[in-house]
Amino acid sequence: MIDRRRFVELTWDAFGVVALWLAAGVFSTSEFYRRAVLIGGEPHWFHVWLFQTASSFVWAFTTPLVIAIAERVPHKQNRAAGPANRVCWGRCRLRR
Image 1 (cartoon, helix red, strand yellow):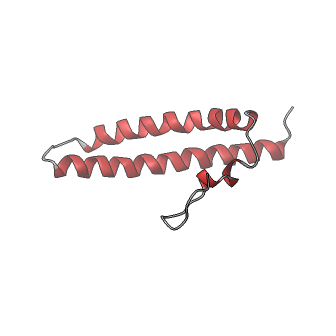
Image 2: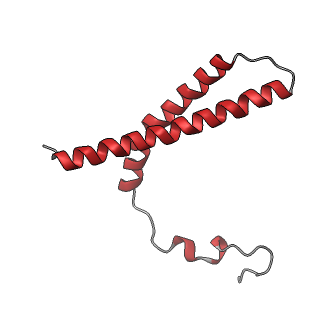
């Protein structure tokens, strides 16, 4: 049985994930709508909003699954320490 404190914490985490994806949906709605108007289309605002919000909710509900899988998959500790993963911006050379 889960205690009340943990339940409240998980509930707020869930609301946070949904809120972030909903904000992303609103942003992508405005971007899609403005792009469609710019190229000469006449999209209905509600249809664009409905599609983008639905796709955002799909991402919101799959986020916990992705996090759970990522927590269970083992990964290497020093993976980013290699020379191929270093950002050089053209100033350094890789040793062979």
